[in-house]
Structures are given as C-alpha cells and as structure tokens.
Length: 156
Image (cartoon, rainbow, N blue to C red):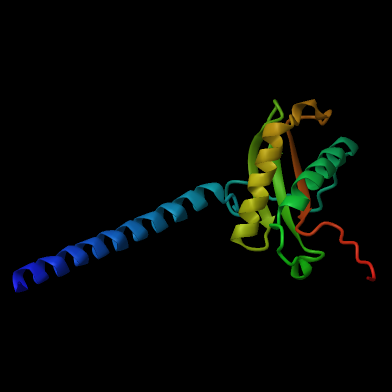
C-alpha cells in the first residue's frame, strides 16, 4: 500500500509541477504579447511632437476618435471619479492611405488603460476610414483621450 501511496503522491507532484510551468509559460507569453501591443515608445524610433497644433481637418478626426474611444475606456460599473479630468496623450502617424503607421502613448495612466486606449483607436480606424476624412495624409497627429467623458450630476 505504501508503493501505491508513493505513486499517488508522485503523480500529484508531477501534475502540480506541470501546472506551475504552464502558468509561468502563459505569464511570459502574456508579457510578450503586451510588449508587442504596448506602443509606448518615447525613445529612439519616433520623434514626439512638442506644441502640436492641429489643423481644422485634423481637429475633426481627433474629435471623432475621442467620441468613439472616450466612453469605452472604463468598463461599466467602474467608478471614474479618480480619473475625472485625466487623459491619455497619444501620437499617431498616418501613412498616405490613411492607415496607422505608428501609434505611441506619449503620456499614459498605466499599462492597462494605455493598452485599452490603443486598442480602441485601432478598432476605430478599422471601422472608419481615416482616408475619407478629408485630412491630408501622410500626417502626424497628437490627441488627448479623456478617460472619463463629461459627467452630469444632478440632485436627487
């Protein structure tokens, strides 16, 4: 009976070791995926614009992106009071066809929020063509994406 008990313990230890290795492998994969998605890159590759002034057509595009992305940044039921008035600053380079050449988080509010903003901007550009916006391309634009859109408080 002790041999069976020892085999039972060894089998459980092997399963536990397998689960631990699987977890560590999955964690390292998530870290790699995030670093591939995270486009926060303030050094070397992309020159960050200072004192960016948008043209009239660029302002229209920025406002449309803000209206699309802003309400979707925080999940429903999340208290946004801590983020009231805060924004993620993003710089986006557009190629001649209106597609995203690069997307850089200039000033972020944390990896999860930054990643969500980047993904929502990519989602917007996949559904709405920036080439048909009337904006001259290629272009570089910078925008602040508010984390919490305007809140309306009333007395109840």
